[in-house]
Length: 88
Image 1: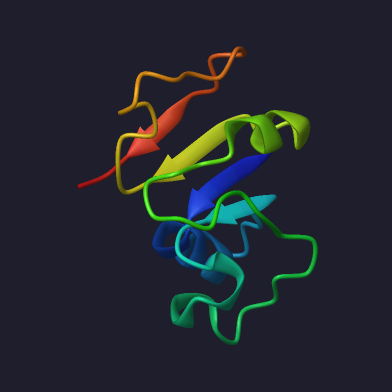
Image 2: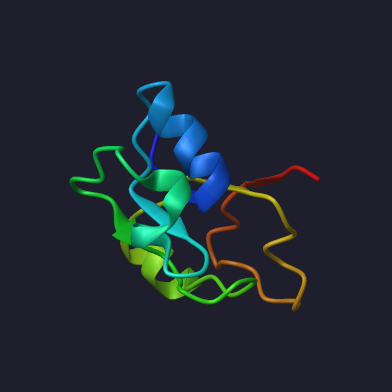
């Protein structure tokens, strides 16, 4: 399954050996939560808190979005209706 994740859930997934195709958040690829984790092949899916580059996630073929906020809070949805999981 092709997963995109916010940095904190992304770090958790990576620690369990699950590699997301993209992470997003404030400068996600240098986030301290991801420090020391192998990010080979992981791309940035957005670099501003609360903003996800849905177009890029579609190009990457993301099938699941794992986040800590509602990725559809601004009313935008991916055209493929990609499932999203948010945890508060």
